[in-house]
Figure 1 (tube, rainbow, N blue to C red):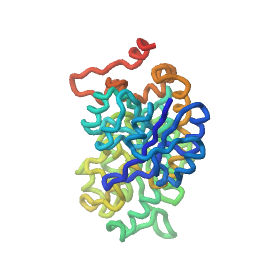
Figure 2: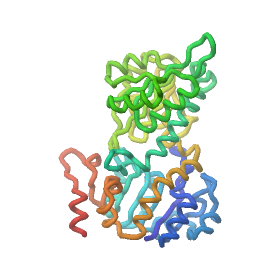
Figure 3: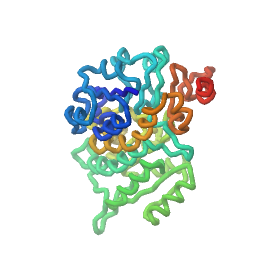
Figure 4: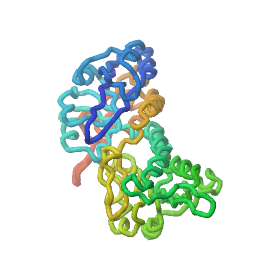
Length: 378
């Protein structure tokens, strides 16, 4: 099996410094019998040199086209940009944080026409519902939420409220509302508690809220989600963290424009659901922190790939989570691996040009049952 690791495209629309695999991950693939082609400079943003990749057995290639065309499996971070689509080899496999439910029609059409298999890290799912490859990125984003919010609340940062997250004697702490008690939400809660903020965690699932109460030993307030409750909460919030995820689908809109109008001037919305369209009606993609904007006096942060800001840590974490699946691909063909491993199979959006994930279907369209298709091939 041949793996290609192209350099992630840098643009004003989206900065990306992570790389598909660390040198340590490449070493494991090579040791298992795989061939790995790494585009020159692919690891620079995360602090990995070409020589480090070459030393563990990777072959360095000098164009993105070569990284795509020489590979059976392309290991990426982001979905290919439009100008990269011509490099995609027919019948190859593309892996990455693809978020195809909100991708352009051009990308979908290319994958279908070229009979590509598209596997999204964000929808690789174990039978118990956990998302093993997305999980470390959510943990990192959650940990970073507190430092992002702290900066944005400062007066000189886009006119923040000018308050501390924590308290000092005689003054109350900031009020932080976190919507979503998944990995990102829990790690964000832990970080905000750590600096002394008052945290209210909101979720639809009472079992998740019960676990959170025990996890934080009563240091947070939990509340079952309802539209009515959220309308009340945002009025006194200094920070609202949106950590809502519906695997493989567009994020639901939970914060409306009318709700934003009731929030305090200089308060902050951190919309970490922006990768899947955003959970606030007023959210729009902000490729970098420099492009953060206000709506009705409320600061909006909707940067889609926050873990890229700590690219080296994120690449190591991603490699640890992804490597077991890639090693399975080395020893057997793709259909056999997908048939054998349910969690990897759940990550497939498109299989050899056929849509197998319902979230990509238009009204009236019918997808293909992947399991039945794989059994026929076997």
